[in-house]
Image (tube, rainbow, N blue to C red; front, side, top):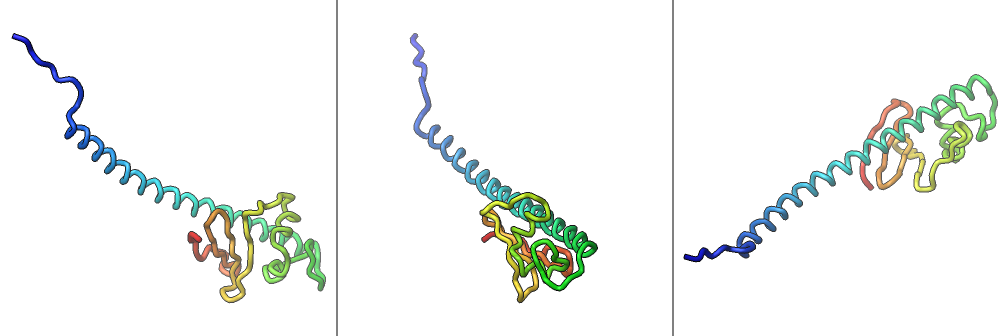
Length: 138
């Protein structure tokens, strides 16, 4: 007697495999996007805190070195004086490192906080409380 061997897969078997792969890829994609969002927020928060730490150190240095009336790029001693300047230039003066053009530093007078924006993430930092108020996607 001859035995007939089946070669390949049936259509139903192929459809089941494709459905399982589709379900797994959907679950993995949502997990991946959550992970990417959380990591973007964490990186932006760390960068903002590092920039604020540089400003605080520079203000202490300027306070001991200069006591005058005019606020210039090399003699700010408070956050109120800092926000009247271009903060990117103040950072360059304090560290010698130029911040990228994609990064934005601004001051929000209503909430009295410094706003850091980079790569679609916005961080609000309160200099009076010395903490991060919010981290959100824009």
